[in-house]
Image 1 (cartoon, rainbow, N blue to C red):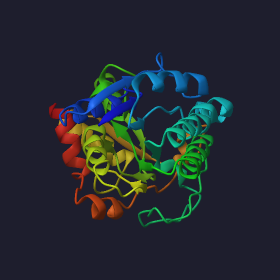
Image 2: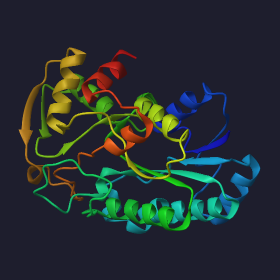
Image 3: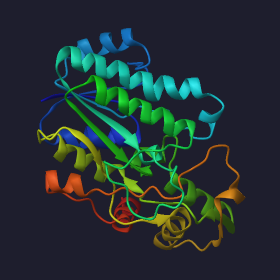
Length: 284
């Protein structure tokens, strides 16, 4: 299959290129320098050249706090960009895999059970709103779509790129003796290596639609950080704090754990527990 990965040098894009190459697909990786998804002409030009049968879009504006003051930038990349890709895919009758986020949820501050695909979204940040708009464009325009919501991504490309939570904690754990980490936001950190394997399994099916895909289990950012330090053998004094004490510009969901039962039912594939995935990442 001819597959084009947009955002091929990002954390997920890098792992996708590696994972899918083992299946003898004809792969093309496009970076931001080669395609600007906000520009319909750029989309047409770049994709006409690679002639894909399937496109995987990992490009996104992920600066959650900055999006609050620059919503036009977030919506251009996260909403209008996917719209351009969906229009292209529908025109050429090809499949589109679009990556979304757990941040489409959060309005229900009392939530304690994992979100299913059928649950009503309720984003509470500009970033979340822009990603939900992108989802709606893809699902409304492109008949042959996989929309995948995931959470807390980290991958090996983050070691040399813009970083990720794991790399940030490892750096801060070596620089500081004491850290304060939020302990009232529940999620599931997800390895891009595992997510790539999940996408590889999903695109082999004809079961198009919306899917939740993360590693197993749930945790808070505080527990995640503590586990990183434990696995890495670092001793750091940890102070659990509330979201209000962090005082970030953008609101985050207090609970955004995703129920992945539908993905497992369709593919027969499940991702490892988040602790196992973290250990594998650190050992790599």
